[in-house]
Image (cartoon, rainbow, N blue to C red; front, side, top):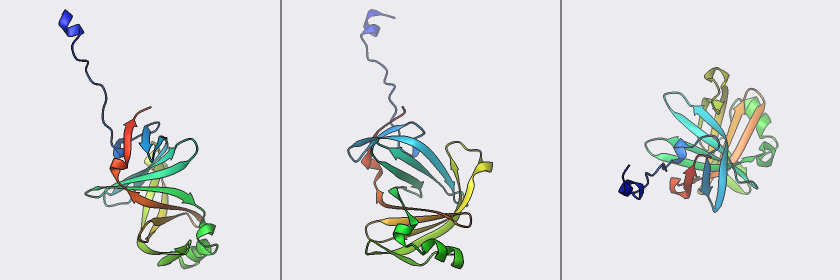
Amino acid sequence: MGLFDFFGKKKESKVDYTVAEMNLGFMVEYFLKTWEVKKVYHYDWGNNFESIEYLLDSGDEKCYLSVEDNDELICMVSKKLEMNAIDPKLASQIVSADDAPQQLVFENKTYHRKSSGQGYCGENDDDEENWSKFVNWVYENEQDFISIDRWGEEEFSAAKGSYVKEFEFSNILPK
């Protein structure tokens, strides 16, 4: 190594990560906060369509970031919602009809069913044999969406969120 090599430029080791490349323990800036990826969920929707969802924790708040690559990157941020908060009878209606309604009213806003589908979900690096089968319904209005998942006969989860742009997430770094 020559004297001038010592004072030469340092090699950059920084890699620019995208939201689709995040993994457990990654840190990311979003909405003026630093968030840590606490869990990673992988979804298989069939027909070679997959998506990923991250549980993000800022210390005082948690949210979910879902990422789909459907010719363009689609990002959605949501927070868990109690089924009873939407409608106390909703879960029993879905069980008895074996389908969700075409529209929902929540907080005086009407949401129309945009899609429904079945898929499989696995957490972090679960073996695919351990993935859970579920049914999903997505409702939208002009500003946001509600997602309802049915796991088995009578277990449900729901979330309310909005579509966001990938550029809203920055400084994506491994821990």
